[in-house]
Amino acid sequence: MTEHHGPADLTAGPVALDIGPERGALIVHTDVQRLGDQIEIEAIDPPGRRTHVGVLRRPFAAGVAYAAVFGSLTPGMYALLDRGSVWREVKIAAGRVTEIDCTG
Image (cartoon, rainbow, N blue to C red):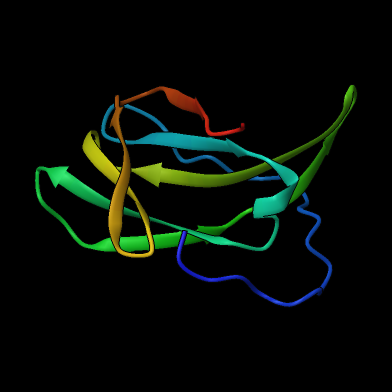
């Protein structure tokens, strides 16, 4: 996580996921304290460029979650970055949505 954005409406609407034989997706669950933060991700294998998405409030039938959604990623290993340093590593598989719990 690299930045925090202001108090604009940080509630997400529906999210489109582009997954299939050559794409996967990642959902990073966080605590409310990360609301508005930007989570940065970088491909490790194969190496690639960095991208980022914001942690948003995501309402669902049972309540509210705070999460960042990377809706379409090339399969491989990725590093989640916190202020430029590796925070967690995660493997993205084609045709699947990977979820990681970064709460607590």
